[in-house]
Image (cartoon, rainbow, N blue to C red; front, side, top):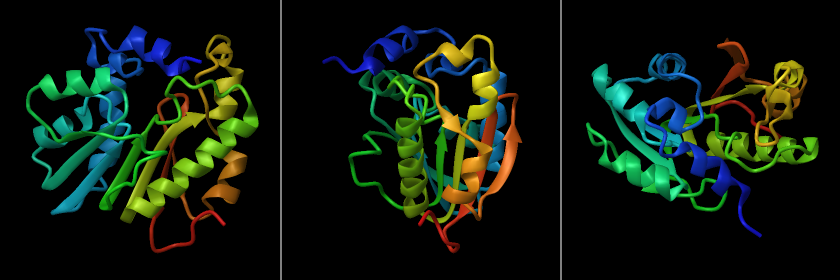
Length: 204
């Protein structure tokens, strides 16, 4: 059976707007997410970007002369190939974060990783993947993990997006169970950013 993400990314990967090519609505919105990450970078940090798409977080950090080392991991070969051709060049490796071992880094970032084309129509499927993502991000982070996900309650109230089976996020009511120590930051209209530190307890 074909992976549903093939159709999802097949429609996006060649889009001339790089933000749209990885499923985001605009370059400006993408920059808002990147700025949240940049504020948490300390000099000399390794930054690991899970589901990096074209690696534009790395280019944002370079453009702002952020003193860090960036590595993006991306499983979709079309996005990876396109990202490796863009200037300036950033480090991009092929990896499926749910399958492959992850390197460790002071700052681990996962922006929109739950939105990857797999159907999340089942609430149990969405919750299980979210829990796994938070565990992976926290385990790979030696200091801080930032997970940006859709606000599931707001998503389900949206007149159009609620019908998209590939979209999934986190409910505010789930956060005390999954990440009781998280700093929760509203981000844009439909998103939440969870900032987690590795020296506090993670999901049980």
